Length: 304
Picture (tube, one colour):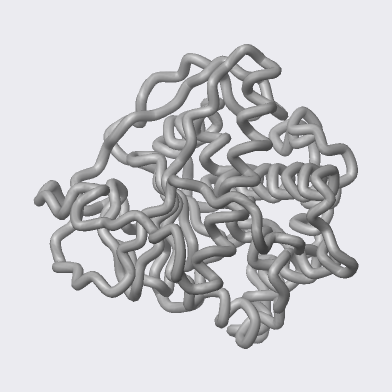
């Protein structure tokens, strides 16, 4: 990916190296509900999150920690989302953090254009870089969760060591694989704004775990499709290099639920899938990339 020398996002909070206590942050926060039909699944004007927030990660590692379990946290306040955070310096930051800031800027440009075409503003999310563990409006999380989006504070959280894990443990090297991860999480922010995540939160209160998993798959696949839309935009901006799309497709394949479960436990249990199979994740990323149209990302109607 041709990213060096390009503009960086100003919406980066660098909390790396901070020591975090054990208290859970308060849940809640503001939800979107913007009236924008983008690929179905949500309805504009839906109210705020009902009591708890939905935490959506790029993948849930086999560490015994499910991000949804973070939602049972207490009310003792932790640091506010901006407490003790520092803006990344304009110069001298490490290369990977610089890369993240550039990719996020490109997603801001894409989604600002998409929202503006529909007469809406695009409220840009913050991206928090952390080390080991972090306090969010959705509670305390550690790096084992992987990158995740918290609707309660409209922030994406990522420990940059995940990228080494993506390469070494999951066999998904390359800077565009890394960009895919970010674009996927920003896709969850778009879902929050368009009402998809609040609707998921509302419905899952009455669902069994298996039903909630199946709904989660559709949410995650739409985020993959939105990542593909961003990849299409990156191509239009002449940012793609040979092999970039293949890197993203390989990442999608390596972190499919079936592939992960077979790697970690030797067999797959479809009723526990919550992100989609390798084939599904590749298909929906490709659909977004091929069309460049968020409206093509309707994972909520028919078969997936």
